[in-house]
Image (tube, rainbow, N blue to C red; front, side, top):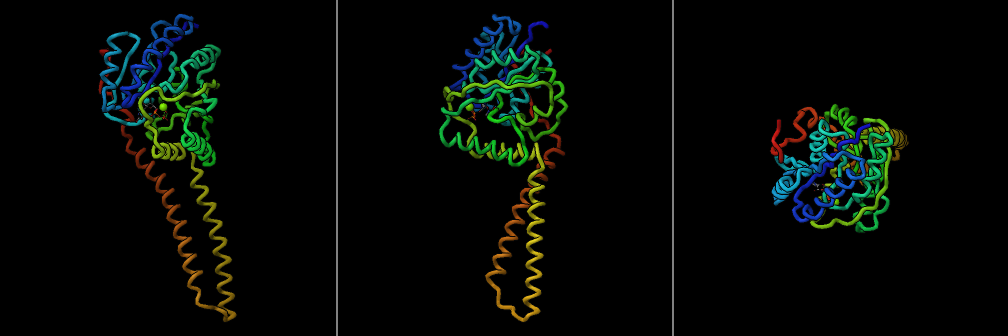
Length: 318
Ligand code: UDP
Ligand code: MG
């Protein structure tokens, strides 16, 4: 096997503080991997600017001028982390043999890349980076992140536990993945669906080197909803199950009502009626909301809008 060409794919959104610190780290890692003979010397660090409003794209363009190993593409507007990673992977898939996607804030330990490339050389097509500990996260971040994985699993969306979007994917797998046309993206749940031999390597997650997180609770919840609706219809089944249960209880209620009426023991049941009406209408609204969530996703899918639009590249296209 010839030494593989690696593209490190890095989504960046408003990262002007951290990029000048981490960019040289990625380049050093690329060079040390090349020196060790694990990857070819024409490997690249590919930045994906996700419509940043600060100087991120200027910094990427400057880097590309300084060293040919740095290249960048820019999305025409901010589309979110998942779409940025996808844009980078699709850009890379025909140009390299392996990709490693990683955040640009230095939180994911770049030294795990050695183990990832080793696993690829051993025949794995996908290597998941898995966090071994979350000691450096705040208690709140840790609790919400763990709740996120548990909730996903409960709702039938199986994902690799504590794996975010730090992973190696071979271009072989990406060629197949390109056939997954959905616009509702949840990469960490979709990549396992492609199959092929995979493994995981663990690393410890550090604190952000600079700048601040773009993943507040609101975005985490949105990601969880995307993940569940993208991978599973279990919530719909739960509704059905719950509907059957409520229908059964109602049936008993109806029998009870008829019997008491026949016995002439009916009383002014205002409180019980109100409780039942409130409860059932609440349940119905929640169920409608869940169904609506799926219909919304179908609506977005049928439009088949592009998942990313690349407006600029740091190199001339042939
Ligand atoms: N990111 C992006 N688009 C966005 C939000 C974030 O490309 O709309 C990138 C961001 O630059 C970083 C990665 O996604 O490289 C992860 O974001 P962040 O570090 O803010 O999330 P956290 O690590 O706190 O979950
Ligand atoms: Mg981060």
